[in-house]
Image (cartoon, helix red, strand yellow):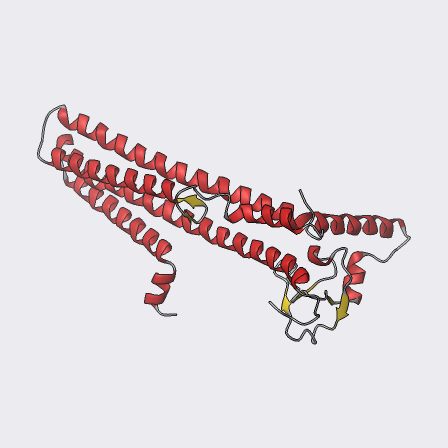
Length: 186
Length: 101
């Protein structure tokens, strides 16, 4: 895992890029977290199941008696189970891809946030012992927002994007053309 | 936002609602038919049409709705990834203090 604030750009970009590019099928473009191949498979399974249900209904509705109706009902139940299995596979695959995407984003962004949280926890413990040091939260309150030269967004002081970088404090009302960071959401 | 735009923007959720409503209607009609039939053999066609089709449509609707939720979350992840990429690219492309992205 590479650092968000590190100067080695290519590996980090590749890590983030896996969220979008690595989860796609080789030959077909992706549809959300799913491959288009899986989409085609589920649609085909649903169409076949629907056609089987139509046939089952047609064959059963013409008969009042006989064991054959039970056989057709069994076929309809099998079609229903097949459709449900395809849907379950679709949802499980989607959840798996989403989990992988979340993990990639957290691995890309979280380490510095976790360091800030650990710092907060240490400060809290120190305050409970009575030494009352300045915590990260105090620092955030004293300097509401920060910017970094060359970055188009303003951040909270504890944001992962500005950790280990030289920052400039700005007043909340004087952010100018800068946009709010979408990670720390100042 | 009018209904047409809403349906176009949220087509997957609109389809999910339509499928769920169709499934509920099929189940209800099947139940009505079964309750009026006396013989078990008369009830089976209603079970095949109303019951099986209703369950099928309800399953399709539920899957569509959950898929829409997942796709929304996927889009959000992509936006975060784009933000990470943009913030990583910005300081290397220019060292000017002004906003560029």
